[in-house]
Length: 201
Length: 128
Image (tube, rainbow over the protein chains, first blue to last red):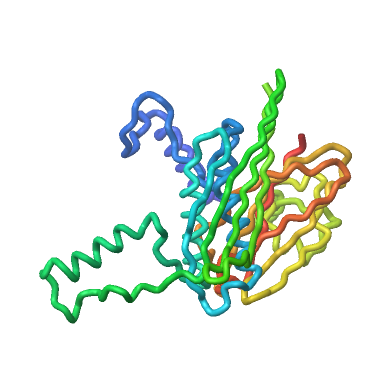
């Protein structure tokens, strides 16, 4: 038995040396000299203290968690996304935040989302194409006037407070999201996510 | 089993134990079983973890206590699992939290769907 293990170790060492002597095999990638690698999309991003991927993910997770926790989605109500105002001095695509929230909520199976105002024109175009182009069988085309209206609408706002000294920059973000009953106009749920980012030179 | 094999077995066990993350002794075993700690706890213990199922959704809250006098930088996220232990969803993003010396903070998360029955708190502690 020890002889067998010794032989195996010797073989491994020989193979290892042989591998070192040969040229490193190339990977099946196209890249320039610059070092580029894929990273973990869920990592904490600390490149600068401007609004980043981690902020987006943290906001979406907090809002989804808070919405699911309340149990407001009993009976799978219909929800639509309204405006999300960016009141910061940065350019931030707030649609991205709302898309993340919507994706997770849809995947939870607790709620049904209906077309938002921004998505409505595409829906109207498709309905008109099916009903007015004369190219489709009446029995298979989607009927006009059968859309389900949203019971609730989600409205959000992102603000920031920036303080800066010679050596330190402090950014405070606050994302507020409200769920409003469309018929009654009452705020049925509301939550906030606060984020503080400080950088030093 | 000859002496060589015994030595090999002992070495394997020793390596396996070294590779295991080191929880603080003050963290209860039942809590430690739900925590996937990377590396050393660096004086951070988890005295309590509360799990509740509300509106058919799992909610977890864990207390993290820094037993040292210096601050610790904690990176954490919850991994949600279904009945067979498969991960549900793409996984949460990592979060960074500064834990002051002798301080205690709670981390909380809500499962993304009703199929979640179990979880792990992934944790990395860095001394500052």
